[in-house]
Structure formats: structure tokens, C-alpha cells
Length: 291
Image (cartoon, rainbow, N blue to C red; front, top):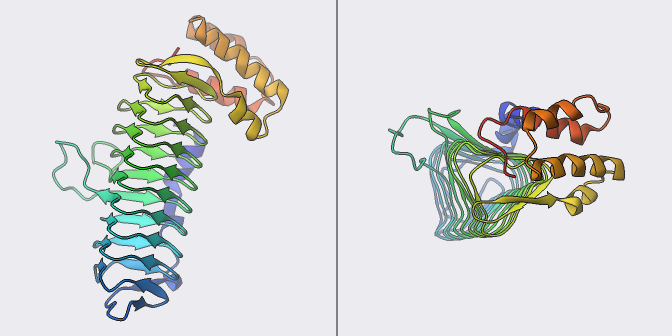
């Protein structure tokens, strides 16, 4: 796990909003709960907590031990189970089911949770599971992620920031996804794998090994295609940074021994931070690298 994702996982106390912005929802007969708008056909548990400005649509269900930050929008027929903790400005679309029990036969009802940051979008029919005691007992999602229709995030996954998952993308349990990763439609990722920052996974890819940061992969089983130069450019990486990443990815594609690659680039300038993060990722690969 890289340092940024450790911070996401350890410091998600911000996802439990300030008590001054939270109301217990004892009644919603008139559609208003302490500066929230709750449709009279919605079901909100009396112990759920909604931040100021939240909107809950008809037939939405918010269960016990759910905490929403400010200005969250829960559309009609969405379901949120708990314990789940959300930051501000999240939007959950119809028929999404967020925070339900993990789909793991070993799970016996132990207390586990889901923690979600700010400004995330969960489109129609998305499912997100809570953690298990066999992982970290928590599923973690950072900030500003877009999870498109029918996608699934399984138990104990750790998702960074500004990740895009196109329709039907599926993560098995214990997957780590770093910042700015992009998933094409119907991508499937196996358990315990890692998807590096700014990686791009082509539609329909079947992922059975770690995917290196800044790389593009595609196929069944996925193979390395090159670097995500467009994504790196959009993030503001300069030509020197892109060039050295390209050198490393070319060596990976040629299937040169991983330790040789690590040794060659460990002595390069530490000022090239993307290269340092890529080498650190390769050093900690325990399930192979997609090549």
C-alpha cells in the first residue's frame, strides 16, 4: 500500500461529519428534517444521521448506523446500509446498494464498516460492500470518484481519489486502487491485486496481476500496452517525467527481469517523483506485474 492510500485509510475521521452539521432523523412526516429534505415515501432509520442540506428521494432506504455529511443526495430507491460513514456532497443514484454486508462466505455478521470521503458519485445499480474481519474490517473510498452503473466494489477494497470506474467494472475483495486510475467497461480485477496510480485498464480487461502505475493494459488476460501518456499530461507531468516512465514500461513490456529494472532505476534522481513511486510499486509487487 502506498503512503497516500495509508493516509486515506487512517485519516477518514473526516468522513464522520462535525456533529454541528448532523441531525438525528426522528421524523420526516413533513418532508423536512433539520435542514434536510426527506421525501415522505423514503425510509430513514431514527438512528441514522444526516448532515445539513441532504436530500433523500422517494423509496430510498437509509438504515441504522449510517452517517451522511452535508449536502448528500440520495436518489429514489437507493439503499444505504451501515455501519457506513460518508463525507460531504456525495450522490447516490437509483437502485444503488451501498454499505451492505460483504459477499464472503466467511462473514458471520461481525461488525465491519464502509468509509467514504467527499464528492463521490455512485450511479445506478452500483454495489459496495463493507469490510470483513479477514481484511481490515473496513472498505475505504476516498474523494471525487465516479463509479458508473452496475459496477461493484467488494469487501476490504481501498480506493484512492479521482478514480473512474466505467459501467460493469468489478473489483474482487481486498483490491487496492491508487489515485486517478481509469477502468473501462466490464473490467474485472482479481482479489488482493493493486492498480497503480493513473493506470488505464481497457474495456473488458481481465486483471490477474498487479497493474503498474502510469501504464495501459488490455485484454483477457490483460497485457501491457504502453504508458498512459494522456493521463500523465493531464496531471501536469513534464516531458522528463514521462520519458523515464516510458523507459521503465518498455523494459516491463520486454519482460526484462524485474530486479534488473529496479536496480537500474534505483539510482536515478529522486527528484523524479513519479519514477520513485513506480519503482516502489514494483519493489512491493507480490502477485506479479501485468506485462
